[in-house]
Image 1 (tube, protein in one colour):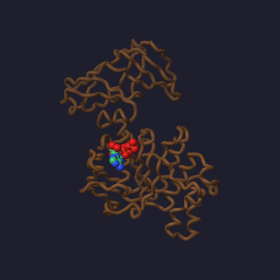
Image 2 (cartoon, rainbow, N blue to C red):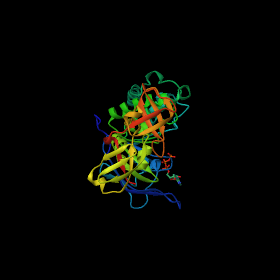
Image 3 (cartoon, protein in one colour):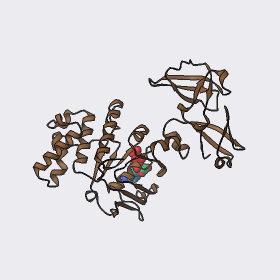
Image 4 (cartoon, rainbow, N blue to C red):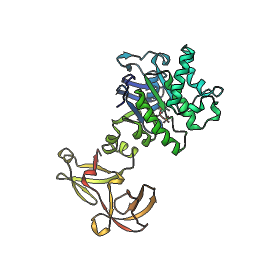
Length: 351
Ligand code: ATP
């Protein structure tokens, strides 16, 4: 959790959204976000992430019956300028004809903050965003990553209680995105601001979120800390959307799960079910010589990924099994290999 908590707690109560006469874009959502927390809304295109974010901002009104509270104050009918939120978008929305410092100070200036105070705050924000040496540059002399830092510095300059970020890093290349993600994480934590971050990138979600809200088709599929979402996905959709997942056919008998490679004992709750889907993450499976396992397959592809090797093994189940093995593993396409799954790494999902 964060050090200097200044942000607001947010509560969405029964918030749904229907645009005009189209089908409901967002099913009724109830969600509590703690002060200073970073919550990531994660899901595929069109699942309702931006709608939820815009509702919190005050740019979209929930359908009748929905309520939005900041701390204990009902802000449902308040417009965006009354809510004290900062926003950062994928497109930077900066003023191209102003310098970096002017962009960052703009919001303060139009609020009538005295010029000397604006200057102090702008310098603070530039230092925080690592932009001190760029203060007098114009926006078109900056790289994409620098522009996004300016947008962020501008959004937090007015000390909002809530920071809303809609895919802020999506337009940047992979290396820069990773670097900015680390900076952003540090920044959000040091500010103590409540942040809601929209992305369809699961790595970004895991790296930044205190909690992740996984959305699908206008509904919340699961809310949890990143490790809960990864290790205990609530259903197949979450398992496959967050990280890579092997879905293995399995039948349950007498408290045992029959997997292609053998039997795994399961808890009493699961044993009352007949059908189940067993999910195993690629890094949980070990590759061994074929004589050391009763579960055998044939290597169909290998990709060296630097920190690990990802291999695909066919003939072991009805669909190829994906395995992330240590980068020292040396196998060739066509090799017969044995697979081993530790029982504790198998997660049963509703069929
Ligand atoms: P993306 O990642 O593509 O931005 P999203 O998860 O943010 O998607 P939303 O933008 O919230 O999804 O959209 C949810 C649904 O609502 C979509 O089916 C979209 O077409 C619809 N929608 C969004 N805004 C409007 C609007 N102003 N009028 C009508 N339909 C809309």
